[in-house]
Length: 413
Image (cartoon, rainbow, N blue to C red; front, side):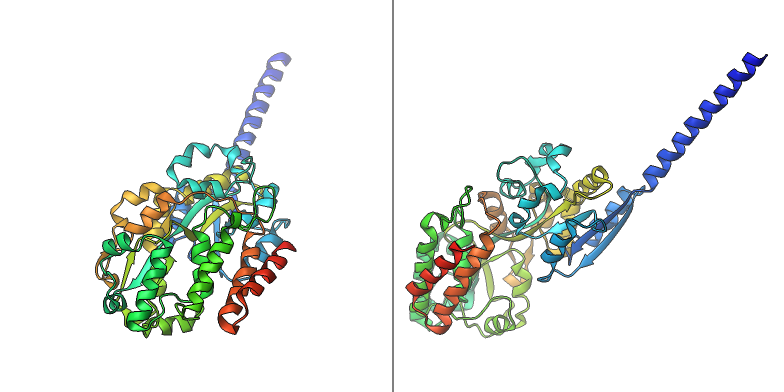
């Protein structure tokens, strides 16, 4: 009798243990809370709501923060903070965060390579460390570039105006300079916005950067001096207006038709529309001189997250086909997910651009850009040269003196 009683007691105890385990499991699932910090409009409302529905067992707290100059500083500070968010956006300067790869969750530990073929390769590789052993983020959007040009000014100067004809005629950087000469001679208008803008356009097209993988300053294998001289020529010939991008002065210049063209990213479509008096006067063609990217963003999981596996799954979802399609339709974010390129949403016949399908040349660029290794100091080093070329244009600083000063400063980084 005593033996039966003890057996019954044991069974009850086991059921109690199993029941307790079940409760812990339920508690564990329902207690997953993930804080997602993203900068303004990097993720659409549609993608956010879909993620909350997909992961209804989790608590997903999304916080939108300004994409100002302090964002990167705060992100670096949060790398060692226990109160940091689980998931964060990283801007296109991801190379500056790769040295801290051990502070991020390595996506390669979560079978993401099986997803690689869905995304543009050059952007995918840019999220990896130089030795390819770690991948600190997944891809949201990109900023492939094309030539934005004024058809009214091109027509007056006798230049082609049809996008396909412009793409076939102004093919190289030399063609671009020749078109600038024509615009200047025929209607006395500069082609380019500024020396800084032109140097940036040319630099982004290069297939090498400021440093090699050994950390040596190579100045893009010598090509930086070539595009420096190219830009100086444009300044000396009067082909630059001397106005900074992303300023109200640029909007005024566009409204008044003070310059002819620039190579800009897909997101620049919205910027052009700030110049409300120019509706119908812009077209978009293939960028002369090569394909390039400007901007874009990533989603990363910080290494101090209490739920790295769950956070990775949420990031995978927020960067998948459906999420990027929602980002495109709601926030005009150009997708890094290549399958989106084949959707009707990518056919954008924009009346502002005379009914032209404005995504045609951006898609071509996105599919043909090549991966370029970038050192964490790359942006800082290139900024030294843009600061100096600005002095050449605005204060008549001797170009060779400016170049030598820039090289000396870059060598000290």
